[in-house]
Amino acid sequence: MTMRTVANVKLERAEEDVLKKMVETGLFQSKDEAARAAIIKYASDLGVFSPDRSSNL
Image 1: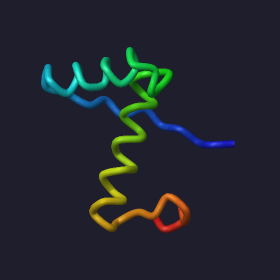
Image 2: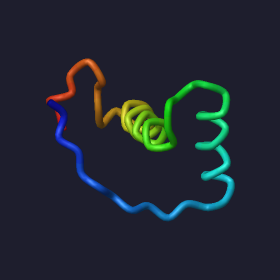
Image 3: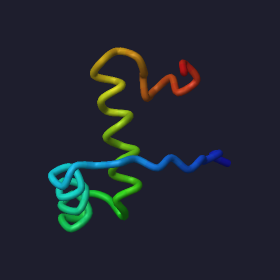
């Protein structure tokens, strides 16, 4: 079972619009899911996280 926490994040209008678009186009079920995927993708791009080795945090 995945443990989740709540994090309140303030977004600019454009960032909110991107999350909405990601859901509206069917890429994600919710804005929460889209935001989590974006965080993992960015961390992976920066080299601080590897999705295949999630224990590296």
